[in-house]
Image (cartoon, rainbow over all chains, first blue to last red; front, top):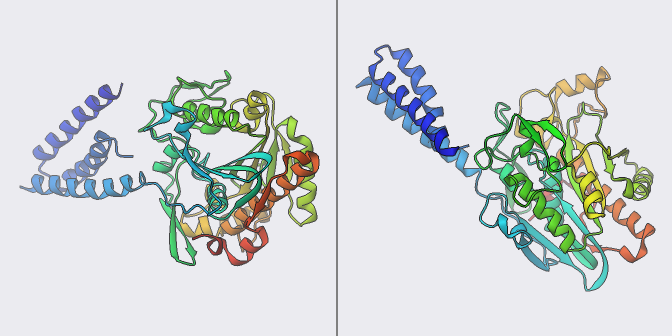
Length: 47
Length: 366
């Protein structure tokens, strides 16, 4: 179960990083970065 | 280039946040008194807990003469500080001349490694002691989901009671525990094993609850402990402490005051003090709310008659709540001796409730 969770979070984290790189607008990038922090913490199971 | 800057910033903030979160995994310090006769871990009673986040220290204070065996539990709910601060206070002060007292200050050790999400609670609070400021963690009511996940939709506890999924991580719904259950059930099972192996006569579980919750300033007792609870209540009333008596509901399963009595046949008591930082009506969560216990919203609720305890501008500080627990413990031990003289537990250097309330908790801490 834990591996499935990691895979889902890793997949979404990858998408977020990809969006951050492709996005040109400053505030949208800032928004993505904020969400990315939480996904990174989740990815490493830091609670 | 801008994206790389954002990525770098994200990593830096994540690292800083990680440090904060991971600091909760370091256990708080404790300095047991010279009366300590044995320092164990819960895994010594139930080896399956060894090297798991559920393992927790057990402090044994045994007298030279025989007497009653008492178990005192703090930190069943790590967001109820008066419970575990009272347990720490005992562990750092008492000497037992007759009988045996076992103290578990952080019963749900995993719950101390995180805080309740979306509550904005501080991770720690400080108490001024003679050697300076000492910090204590404020955890969550339940086991860390990193240690026990996922929650079921409906949790069926070891006694078959159906509860909300999150209760699967609530130690006080998991008794008598399960040897092969989830982490919380294993902790409960370990405590039950300790109760049986140490031939405990009386178990006392120290809690706190919100001022708007009816079971407050209360002694909750198993029916086998009704005489003990009633006698202790009279003793407390004589000393000016108002405690209400609440019988453990026979149909509410999985709680310490029910299953310790039913399964292990020991006298079982749970005590509750009022904690504003715990409630739904509180204002901004802060260290001051935990330690000083003042809150204008609770004050207003009290004026409107919505609370089950009086709540004035002076609030209900932690020292008063810990003092209440100490007074309750004293009265229960005294009443136990009156009812069953062979179960006498003679404790020296027990922190005095009035003194803690007058001089503060720090005066009795190292």
